[in-house]
Image (cartoon, rainbow, N blue to C red):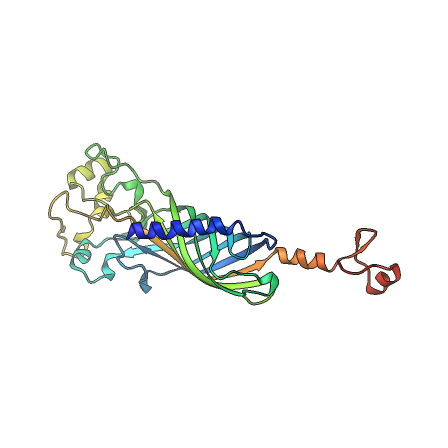
Length: 309
């Protein structure tokens, strides 16, 4: 499956390189906003779109259109992610009883390909599906509510990070690289305004957006080296099991380290074709002796202006 995905996007990139060779007399800029929802899929949420774990998201972007097919976009998106074992009717999850929340902030650079072409400046191809891919940088900070207080999980080392007993488990970084991928559909509603809808996947290279990835750590070791709070938030099974900790052995799997976390932005976009204003002004300029003249119509006629260029 992963090889098929790589092959698909490789072909799109190749097509994009070829499309860049097209004439570029239709270049223009866009400024836009995004509004929608953010979701997460990982150890604490096996399904990407659970209504109970869907959060509001927003963003802004600037885009440069090379031609009717290709554009490059720089964006900043923000939202929230969360996961909760209690929402899924699976015995393992119910007994594990873990949950988290985090804000997510992302900057990205993406290439965008309009499948059928998009030419609002020529009143042609006013509707187009599109695909996009790029590279981004995102920041997260998983937290859990414990006794009414929100506690940052990364400094605790809930899976033995930073302990002498587990030297291979280093604290994970809260700022990481991702690969944005997605599809969308947009339309031009006037010369300068566009609207659209898009679904974006974020492929990450970390399994710790939710602070869950590896095995449990021995209680005595975790308390001795990282503190009692680290253990309380590493193993919360006793909160629902009549005070009995559900743990088969010290190295019992807490998460799945082979499956990295994903998150998603889904929503609507509104953008403004900035350069088309300048094009319109140029078309409405009158010239006298090679210089633009912006007087009244009567004054232009009196001056003998040759008219619009």
